[in-house]
Amino acid sequence: MAKNPPKPRTEGMIRRRKNSFQAILYAGTDPVSGRQLYLRGSSTDEAEAKRILRKFKAQVAEQRHAKTRASLRTTIEAWLDTHELEESTRENYVGYAERHIYPVLGDEPLGKVTTHVLERLYAELRRCGSRCNRRPFVEHRVDGPHECREVRHKRPPGRAPAAGYPPHDCGEKGCKVVECKPHVCRPLAAASIRKIHFVIRGAMTAAQRWGWITTNPAELARIPRLPVPDPQPPTTAEAAALVAAAWEEDSDWGTLVWVAMVTGMRRAELLALRWSDIDLENGVIHVRRNHVRVTGKDIEKDTKTHRARRVTVDEATVEILIEHRWRYEKRCSEIGVKPKQTAYVFSYSPTSDNPCNPSGITHRYGRMCQRLGIDSHLHALRHYSATELLAAGTDLRTVAGRLGHGGGGATTLRVYAAWVDGSDRRAAELLGSRMRRPSTLT
Image 1 (cartoon, rainbow, N blue to C red):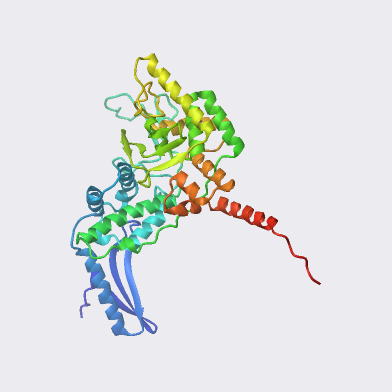
Image 2 (cartoon, rainbow, N blue to C red):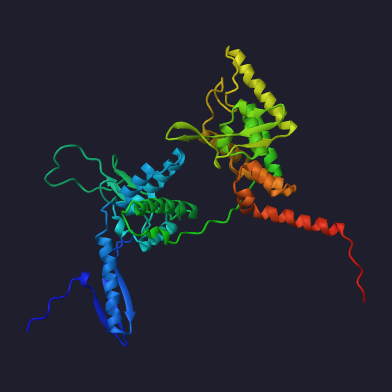
């Protein structure tokens, strides 16, 4: 008698395992790892196992017959076209999508991008940002796999001899050996993975709102925790050395480093400053905008919190800014141009019509730190300003206001908790020293 033909994998199966019944259904291929996926469930009741198998079939059918055939790439692009974003933020999102999302899941239909698939992607990126498959070398793909060692032999053009070319080693003149450097796995930062997840979640939320999908699997996906902030400001001695070195290079450069250190302003806020924003008579700087460079274009936008603020400066800083203004007016008089209040405070242009390049400022500061043997970066000056104020006993709301932190000081407390704890300890010791300890009765 002929045997019954095997059931297709899409039908699934129920098998007996001791006192239980196990339901198994093929669910396709994992787009991240390439492995075959199976849904499994068990019960001591055979009827319940059949119900589990029917539920699995409904899940797989929902994935295969989604309301839309749009891929994840199409969904993200549609979301970016309709979502209101700053130009710099949009550029960052596009960069994350092109580097980490599209190569893996870009062509996958929305119905197949499940919570498990997203968590597998995040786990792979936490292991290695380039998803190297645990090989010592990364495959460099142009039109296909690339061997990590390639010998390019130098031979004269034309047809080869009938007997072939004689053997030779690769040291022969004209031959070239090309080797790829060994690959070292570098995990992608947790903050970067959270941003990747935000792009996917935002696009899928829009797709759910548009009726493309019924549920949003990104809402349930687990993502890495936010790393604990660990600001590393320069020490007082290092700060003094940095200011002195900046002034030796250039008075204008020294002024920029000084203002960044005493105000704690962000780089984009410093470069967007105009003379109309500075009240030299009252010693107040009005922070109203940011200057960023996106895809080769200079863009001015609101501050990070979309709120203007006032930063008071001391007399020494006012004198430094007055001298900086005098140098600007002198340059204008030398070329026969009238000074403008709308001119930028920090600029490489003689008339200060254009702001400094943000990347150029960062690289110049990094080279100065390297020359001094100081492990620091430009944003650390902002940390220095905050920590010095907190160490001096300045209240949290004042520090948050100067830095432009939102949340009434919650961000400041989260980032600079260690320095707040130190101030709290000194406050406790101060109160204890003011009190008289009672004598112990025996």
